Length: 244
Image (cartoon, rainbow, N blue to C red; front, side, top):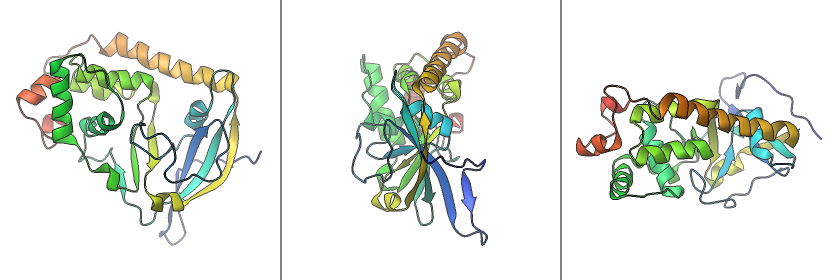
C-alpha cells in the first residue's frame, strides 16, 4: 500500500500564509480514492456527507469490523472559500449539536415530557446547517448517542451531558456537506487497519466511556444542575449564560 507520511499538525499553511489545507482521515472497509457527492447514509449525525477525522488512529477504529480489516484513507482538504460550521465556537453550546442530531438520528422518545423536550430543542437551538460546506462537531458513537438520549429523557443534567461527551476521548469529526467541499479534497494514500488490533481498541473506548459515565456521572447530581425541563420552563435560549 501507499503509506501516508504522518505529520504532527492537522492544518497546513503555505509560505505566504494564504492557502490553508487540512489533513483528514476516513475510516472504511475499502480504499476510497474519490469521495462522491450525494452518496452515503442520510441518517448519520449531520445528514448526508463524507465523514472524516483529523486522527488517523480514530479512522482506523472506524474502519474495522469484528474479524475484518479496514483502511484509514488519507486526504488533504483545501479549506479556502469553504463556509465551515464549527460547533465548538463560543456562540454554540451542546444543545445546538443535539438539535442537529435530533433531525437526523432516531431517538427513543418514551414519554410526553421527552417529546416536549425534543420539540423545544428543535425550536430554540436549530441551525441551518445544510447551507454550510463542512461541519466540525462531536460524533455520536453508540455510547455517546445514549448520553444524548438520557438528557432528552431527563435522566442527566446539562452539565453531565457536556462532561459525558469527553469520556473515552472520542474527538471531533469533520464532515464534507457541499459539492464545493467535495471538489476540494484530494486523496493522498491510506494505511491498513488490522482488525485484531483496532477492533479491540474501538470496543475498549466505548466500554471505558460507558463505565466512566455510569461510575462518575449518571447518578451524581450536583447542586445547581440544570435539567431539560428547567430549560423549557424558564424558556432558556442559546444566549443564556447558564448554557455556556
